Image (cartoon, rainbow, N blue to C red):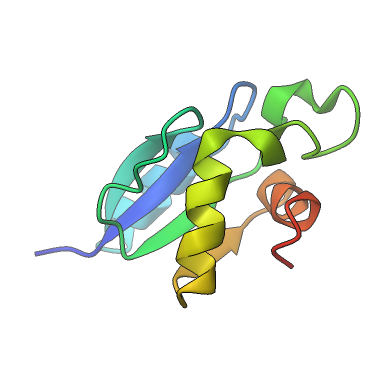
Length: 99
């Protein structure tokens, strides 16, 4: 059985499919995590991909940090869960105070 890795999808993000494909090629089972959900669906790790979450209209990641999924990711990370932010995803993590 492949390890399940969550890929967060925000409105405007555009690298979630690329990230999911790369995870599949690497042998993982990507799981789409919609920004409005709080359920990380039993994933072993979470990736916040690049793109333009919420269009980055104010500042990169500032709106996305308030998404319901981010509360779950913060708890997951505090518990030692693995979280990766790529490009705009890293900016979201920074805005959320997770890095």
